[in-house]
Length: 298
Image 1: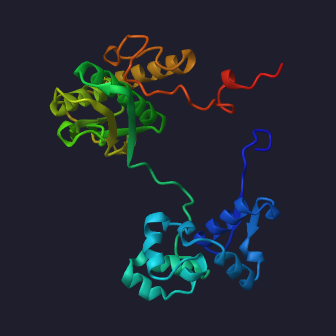
Image 2: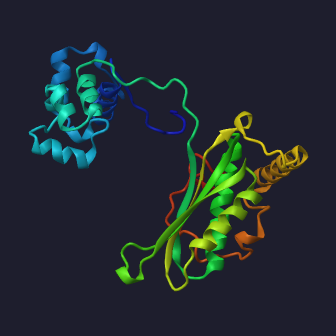
Image 3: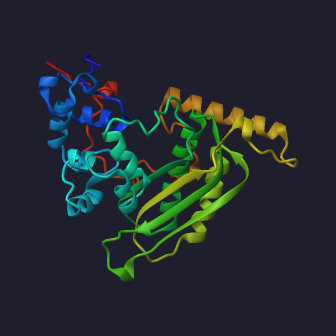
């Protein structure tokens, strides 16, 4: 990490909420040298530190909820710590009660040793220019579905449904606004780009309305399952599934070796420049992930 220049801070405590606040202090206080260990600090020192932390920095609070906290006279992390846990549950919810107990050193939130499987995969972008025609929307939705399908295969998952949405800018005149979405169940869970794009375009054509300037579109793959949990169809030949798997493997191999979108669906568009694509002229260089973006020193 030192060679990449990425800053890293560590917070240690007896509960998850306190550990996150310790991490916050490690970032803010250079004297701690990026490590804050509440377990080695006295209770008085911890309370003093919590008095200097706004309640909005407590994990799970945020700016919106902190406004209600301020109205209740709770301004700092220490104020929340010394509040009545049962009363906070009655006023807010059980999560708030657990937060108060966590601030007092009682671990109520389990650490996730193994990340659970994803529930959905989302691919969405705002357009570089407003889009009115169906063809441009089809190109965008094809691209987003392709990206989502790639992620699906990387995680060795299969999608049982696909959700497509389009919308205009929320800042336009109310009479010129339109948004709609549609979720389609898939007959058989799949990670085949061709099948997913076909379903996505069916959904898009059902919700598209001409005459509007669309500003954003998105695709979400849901009902994700592993290969072992994939519900098969007695009318869907096993040889067809094997052929699909081989085809997607070849597609991914070519694009990984030769560059993204070397092989793509025609419905994604063949134009070199597509005005609907997101503007990225001011995108920060990928100094640590792209050879082309490495700084050159003469």
